[in-house]
Length: 331
Figure 1 (cartoon, rainbow, N blue to C red):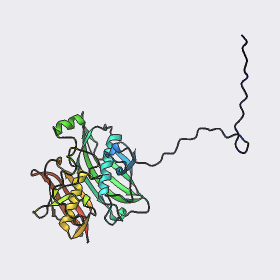
Figure 2 (figure 1 turned 45 degrees about the horizontal axis):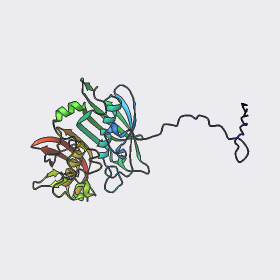
Figure 3 (figure 1 turned 90 degrees about the horizontal axis):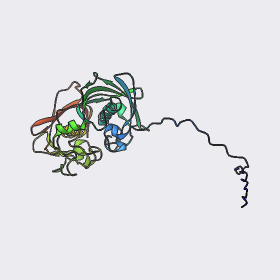
Figure 4 (figure 1 turned 180 degrees about the vertical axis):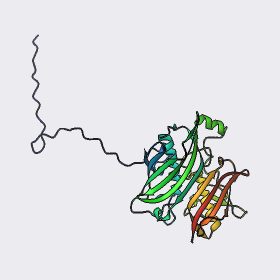
């Protein structure tokens, strides 16, 4: 049997339309690091659009620089006229900064649970105006003092100085305690890990949106009662911002919104934008217990401002106290 020898044909160079070979593909430098929000899990949000933190860098053992961005047209954290950021967006940003630092800088696992004890903020009104681009922020976060650690928990307090470019936009402070999920389950007992079925908490007619400084009925969280200065907490559990994700208790930001709305309802017929708030959370606000919100005007340091103290109770026990400071605007 004769073996036939085959000659491999010469490869013809590929040419372009102009008759020259194409340039070989060479490796290029890595793509530059661009701005994006952090992972939503780090700030305990389910929706990417509700993440305001964009990153952080350490300044030392007890200080960090955190970057954030506020959108120009947020569906909830904007004033009714659409010209300014709602001051409460500062509170939410400070809350997210604390969670992000805990996970990324303190090594808290993502499955640990957080208890928020305090959340304070003071904003500067002229730095809340919405410009031609989203509002980029730099936050200097400092631990006050070093976190207290045990085998399974960490308790930390931090201050936040929020700057918009070179200008001071807000200051704040928050305190958290974190515990493993197993410890949290023992503390909470047999309570369900999710809220009741949507709509079951909203009994009765909510207050008119204009009375509480809101535009949309779905954003109202209070229902009238027969007692002056007293309301029922009846949020819509389907609200995409206030109830961004399921939980076994009413979120702290919902209580802070209830305080703001109660301050407006008490001040009617004027609208009060709370440029500052100091909140203490005493215990969890349970889904299955009626929540009473009361508000009263109290003396404050600024004679031109209106100071309102708002409290929430369940079964006669306090669940939170908020002191709001704002300047009323005639409706």
